[in-house]
Length: 396
Image (cartoon, rainbow, N blue to C red; front, side, top):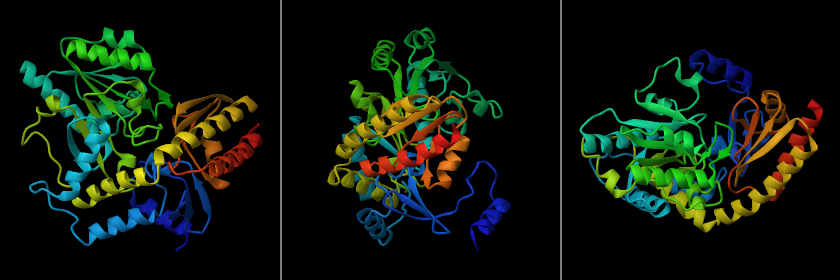
């Protein structure tokens, strides 16, 4: 069947929860994707910041194939070596002592919420702990993660957990004013992704860390999108000189294999005891082997060095584009997590860019998000800018 026939077949059986583009992707190579018809696309979306190493990394693929031939799954009634190694790598990266491996970022957020509530329960003997989350945030679409997602249109049809209070991101006084004796955690993205590519202000995050220390509140940082090297350091919070009590991870942690994790300080993690939390597939040998190989290849390929060099070039080129075209209001972001805000909806621009062989995503109605593989070169930035500028010029 051709692409149109596959799209038609899929539409007959899939739930219509995504506004999919009329493209059937078949394979990838390096930083390029190819559809069923053989058309080539420069990928500046990386599966929503997942494919940090690009496509068809031979060492990564070989490691997964080798694990398939050993063992895929055991359940968490048993230990397995890849999981132990993966968690050790995560503790070394985050500076946090304990790790729970999940299947996704949303599950990691769910676990972090449960951990915060259990810490509060152990302290107060009540289950009415409150969590302060940020307006315009995004943490996932399950009921717990949705409850702390600061976009009302996502939450309203479903209802949410009780005890969630929203404050303005980068507004310390607003957060501090909403702390009560019931507050058990503050959760935020170190860099807001879906909410518009907004990094936390350094002073804001430092003050929030101090506030949490003073009040005995857990600070949960969501680094599902901005972590794993995307900002130029393995964890974005490294650039702020602070450490959270809990951090959530996913996306580039597995570079394509569905994985996630939440890590916590020893004192907080001790609140969860057998029976409090679990996962059938979380930490299975296959997924954990992927995590181990990702860490190995990040070091071997000097991914962070590349991010720091190429991200400066990308920011420079996007700034030049913003200066040239009045329809672009601002460039925002950090590292290889950048966004251009337009004075109009960007759906048409993204669609035309895709027609021209460039994949990007939006972050809200008026923002184009650039989250390419972390192995891109300056030549790929130039190629992207060339395509995007042609499209923008045609819109003027």
